[in-house]
Image (tube, rainbow, N blue to C red; front, side, top):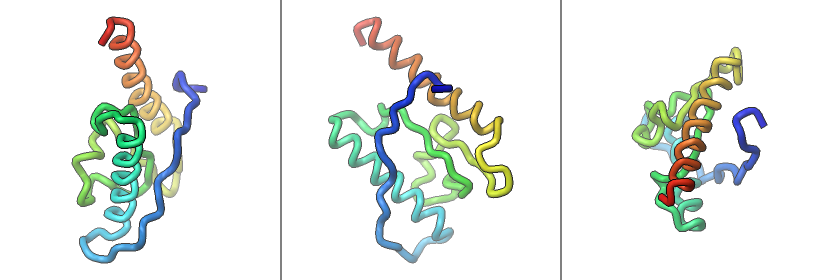
Amino acid sequence: APCGGDDVVGDTPQLPLRLGAWPPAENQRAAEIAEWLRRWAARTRHRADALCWAAVDDLDLTQSEHAHLFDAAHFVRTSKESGLSEACTARLCDILGAAASSTSAASSSGG
């Protein structure tokens, strides 16, 4: 695997469409990702903020109700035109590689 790991542990749930806050598509997608994080943290008994994860999307999730989740440490924005470009792939590998490195360092130091 190009980023040092090949575990895909699931995909986001498809929540019922919720109309309301603008922008609706970004809020819907962000809510689905937030729900996946909540479920995964509960199932694995990890704190959600300690999980190694990244979201890749062409929607600007930083403009959603859950914007706090989608900082540069967890979000790669693609475009409909170019899809998952080389630059996006490199950024994704940086995010997941940095998270994997810090997890390995904590494990090897007993943390």
